[in-house]
Image 1 (tube, rainbow, N blue to C red):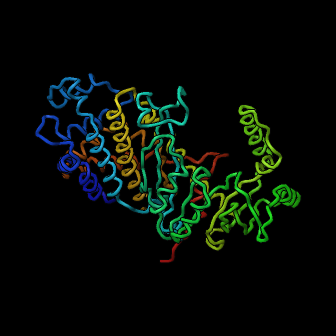
Image 2: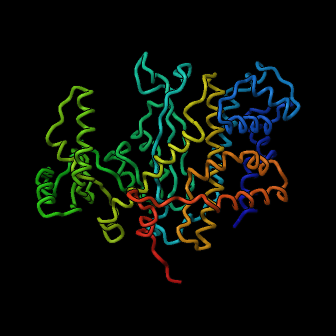
Image 3: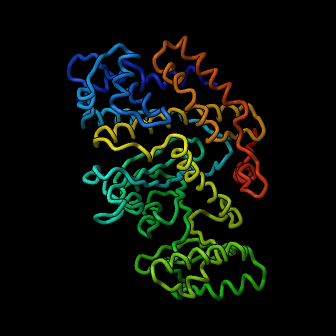
Length: 453
């Protein structure tokens, strides 16, 4: 296990010297002060580790008891400025750029691709005093007039963060896909939900010599080679009559800029169809709309489009591969349940955003350590050694003081602390196999090529 290397990596970005240097570069530190950049950062780091929100009064009390620094609430509040936000933001960006990148599970896992990029966003309402900077998705007077969106992208092969961006909630996923298309590299596989979908976006991925796998939105039209629209009523009749579970077609999608794709059609069980239909009818009733028959027939299917060759990704593996994308949604739930990223109290904009960035930093540090443990266990060949992110993140949050000790101690002291954390996470933190639930382990086996030595 590269424990020494990981300690060096974390201290390179979050060590006292690194933080002081970055504070000068960002203009946050312009003169000598008792509240040094590393103390200010550690104060935020401590505050976001708590299970409750912390007031300015609580923070100044902690400063005095922990560091012997006496400070008025107003003076501390004044330190939360645009420069403070930029300082913390730059810490986050450097942390992302300097990540250790190792294979999480096996060198043969999804080996046909450079990165397997999984991206999604989470949105939540924020105090109304932030609406000038972070507009929500609702109109004036709406409970969501102020809101934040966090775009999160990671590489399934390494666990490495590829993007972690805070924006206002009105910036939609399609806009994000358009503005970040240049980040996609040759032979990357991009997996996103239908919210990011656009024909132009798929064409940009093609131009980057990369691959995509996406759900087809219901409003995207599908045509055969002769320009005739695919009749999904006939497709349903064919598949149900002949008990065909999956079907594949070479089709064209879009109305003006047509893109040729593989369309993989999966027929869902009747129970799933009825559940989808009930949800759709409930949504339609709420909006005063009647569901068209054409829409009802589409609910019978899982529809995915891809440009990956069938030799690399046969149609029967399309849905199992796409299921990995759901991990990002589970991650968001964990961030909210354990780190409460969506429940910060009302405070001025600079303090709120600095706190939010610091919570994301804490999450990244924890996940980097967890991913290194996962990689080490996989190299040891331990069967089914897949860590549960929920269990491990909960343990890491409870051991916050040890994380801070790693950042502020000499390597000779920090390395044994990190070894202890590795040992704790290596026991009783496994992802569980549950009957009737998605079998993550079998899914991984489908996409692991056992390489010949």
